[in-house]
Amino acid sequence: MNEIARLLDEATSGESPACSAAVVLVSSGGRLLVSEARGTLARAADDRGSPHEFANTPASVDTLFDLASITKLFTAAALLTVLDEQGLGPGFRVADAIDEYRVDGLSAVTAEQLLSHTAGWPAEWTDPRSGQSPWARFRSGQPGDQAGSVHRYSCVSYLWAGLLAESLSGERLDAVIARTLLEPLGLHDTMFTPGAELRGRIAATEYQSVPDRGLVHGEVHDETAWALGGVTGNAGLFGSASDLLVFGEMLRNGGRHQGRQVLPEWAAAAMTTNRLDDLGLATDQRPAYGQALGSRVGDADWMGPLAALGAIGHTGFTGTSLIVEPGGRRSVVFLTNRVHPTRHRSDIRDLRLRVADAVVRLEE
Image 1 (spheres, rainbow, N blue to C red):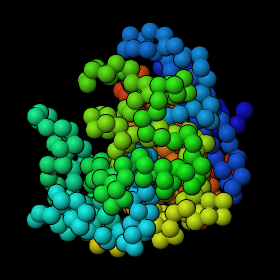
Image 2 (image 1 turned 90 degrees about the vertical axis):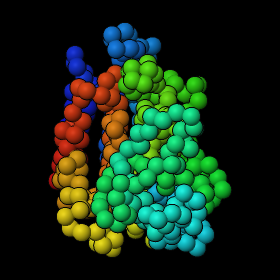
Image 3 (image 1 turned 90 degrees about the horizontal axis):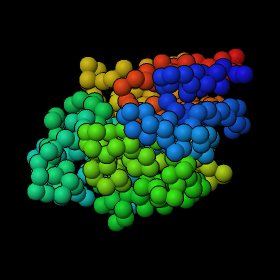
């Protein structure tokens, strides 16, 4: 048994497993090097541990996982493609497309700042007011800092990035992402709001009592995305490891897939190289990792030894991650449902590091 298979066995077994389902795919030089799936789609149906109807359904490379914040990579790629289609670039002012930005403090915000988490927005949207639709309440929010003054990982920025893609294209975000990415890449198992008929292929996530949703299975786990209807720029995509590997390989190859330039070359470069120097952000306001448009660059906190090789990627709160070596050899997909049935007992960070270390040692 290889080391990655052993790690997944440990993660999905025992009295208190890290997750019920786990999948790892690793490609090197375009060749599939590792394909391992362990566990089942679910364990418990509620917070009392009642057996789940899919407790005996094995996970596979085609199991659908809630990708959580990996959605942000697709949002970034789609928005950059739409900008390219209209002869625009990442310096495009959001105020030229969205009315709410035509005020002091927002008028200078650019698409690049939204996608690099430097637009000044808070990390999360939390607005309990009633009397308006959720999207209307969201649109009335205000940033906490001046754009370009600080790097703060922000789901709010990506909610706006999704709205910007919609405004520029005249399409809903799910349609934009399908047209620009899913269809050209042949990603038939990646989608927002999967139908009920797919529930038997989806890894369950968390049993939630606040909000009172019960076991979240087949609906987006992220509370903000759920409140806003499930199709948002920050979270909401479901997808398989097989599909996500194709997307990662496209980024590794500079935006190309099967001989076709799916993502414009400049956009692929923007998504895979650190942009913080170009943005002029003060050193003391920068994170410990690099920030591309969408991707983190060289984040050793979860990429482990791959960070030193210039890897880029993203994680998702549900227990998902994608690591890519742009222009290099490897793409690594690691998907779990570590929030099932609760978010409070799993240390996915250590497991991600151990998997990354095992990937590097595969070819030593």
